[in-house]
Image (cartoon, rainbow, N blue to C red; front, side, top):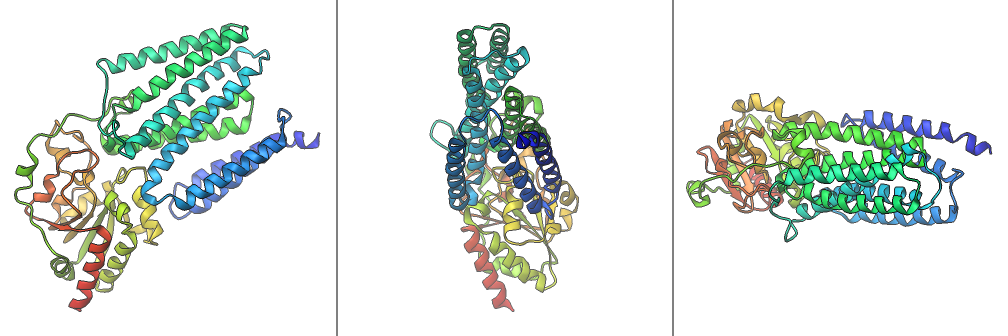
Length: 463
């Protein structure tokens, strides 16, 4: 058929779309266009797959696409930005589960498979299942479900993980060395069962503060599982797209690891987080000074340079538009307003960037941690919006802290630090923050959106 002869060209075109789209998504200014180009590439790849000679029922594919499109649309519309990290975790997991099921389906066909295909089947079962269950655990931690809030590991956890990986590799070897379908199926089931345990064991010991790293790693795993599935069903489009996702996910994971002073090896084998920070909370917060919106307005009225540090509290309060309104008001008075972005602020990579972009805040005002830290001593006022762990000086002073060694945004160097929080509750790392009791810090206890609107109102009243 003519259509079948055009399939390689269609997959090649879709691969080009993926590459171009991924490149464009490396810059905030072209990210939306890059996302659209990637979506066109995926639509082309799906359309090409529908004309593959191995397709048994076009009606079944059409029905599945319709159901998936409806579910995706509902999730995209209804899920709030605060729930986006959880949805990303679920999507990563579903990608892994899909790969596992495709490999299982291909194995059930019972036809003679070459050795390389059977190795790909076992590899897909391993990576896909680990991705699925690891992502579910990550989702549970992000939702702070009972039983998943605190990190948990068994004695000798890394040895157990290594033994599970070795056992899965052994079963893959048996799977590839036999032609007995029943033995192959038994081996695959064994791989899935062991990988289920492995997926839980890899993520469960990791604390909530490290979830952005886990999400980026699971994204990489889902891509690798997809690439392995491409070898199983001999689909070049899937191999290329999966490889791109896997490689970009690893790069992002390395960036996250650097931002949190973690090693990639530790992430891969579930060794993350440190001990517990010492010192009673009451003693640390004994000298906390509270303030009001009117007092903050007076401080801002005379400021020449203001830096906003967004955190998860901003996302919860949906305060990004109020941030923009305050910034515009200050800029109209001649104040320079910038935004200090920590790579792991929030609960997924780029969380704060997405929120601020939604409020139409110029990209050039968003400063990375390494760029803005050397200049913070010249900042008159730093406004910390619900951020906690990413500005916690314990990362520099307490070697026993769970965030020990993590690079932070050093707002303690600013002349005045205004922290807007609803309470003194700890961040995702579950440790107190001495910054709140620093001599140059003021606490404004309020919802971030309400506090910012009150400050805007007070500044306008000052004239």
